[in-house]
Image 1 (spheres, rainbow, N blue to C red):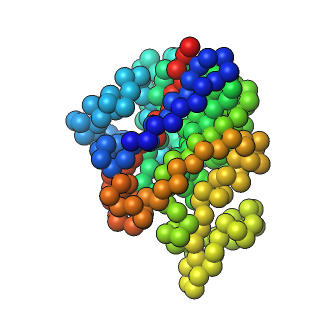
Image 2 (image 1 turned 30 degrees about the vertical axis):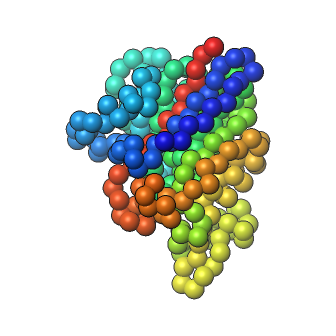
Length: 235
């Protein structure tokens, strides 16, 4: 697994973990289905903090997680693509197998995680999450982008790419015959910069290229998922 930490000015610490194929499957079961018996144990191996997990829909819905929500399971597993909180020691999580996983945080107390595929990016999931965090918690200063499919491996139709080229410029799409290549990470970084988030760390590793390390649905139709988990350790 990959771990990333950043110390905050007031002494708190942001901790981000991205699991790898060797850490096992962190796929969230469909609603009404029982999770793999080992899933909870795999989560505990990452952190003993309470997990908040979601059923991602490739949309732009955001869950705001507070103490009352995390004391029960009623609001865990809802249909969101991002979750944010001001609480310490709550592990926010998203799962991916090619899409972007993004953690966001400020210098004070807000933290969030995003699942962003091409649909979510087009719907403004990054911008909407940052706006929600600013409204509730204040400044959003930093971001961390987890492993994802690289532009060279991500075939994408010219028709669907038109909106991205109009919005973010021709650099995000490389035409090539009947289908070109879309750069999800470049779109995300551009969105983050436009929203004032300039401190961006990135895992430079492709889920499609590195078959021994990552799951990939696009490249290998693998159903398993990696997890990004992020939380704030209180000083």
